[in-house]
Image (cartoon, rainbow, N blue to C red):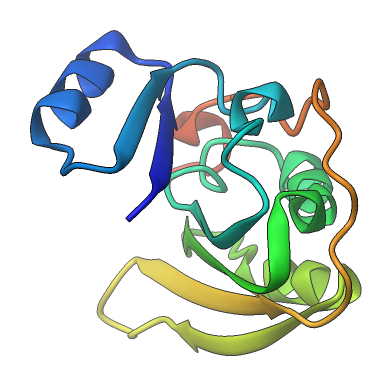
Amino acid sequence: MRARLVELNAGNVARARAAAPAGVDVVDADASDTSVYDGAVPAEIVLANGVFGNISDAGIEHTINCLPSLCAPNASVVWTRHRRPPDVTPAIRGWFAAAGFDEVTFEAPAAFIFGVGVHRLAREPDPFVPGVKLFDFVGSDQNWTP
């Protein structure tokens, strides 16, 4: 197994390094900069978990548009997003389609606040470009009102 986990929070990095199995490279860096993925792409599986609820809608769309540069042919992207009002998951699914991904599944049980989607790249990947800013972290409290 070969995987890279990118995390900026030092406490999370320490916990991840302590728990990561062999083959998982835990990098203490800003996940919004594509440079940190150099050497780990093209990837067959890209996880965007805990990201889309902490960035703006424009940041989500921009990130999705950049994902084909991190993907191998036919790669899968697994993503999560809360469904608090306004529920942006329908738009996210549309942005994946517009970026050349086919939806494999989207699970959003009524009793659960989060949705989980899996999309597969259905076109040729884009070339990897280091130094691209994917998003600005704004925090989940900026993306919904209780």
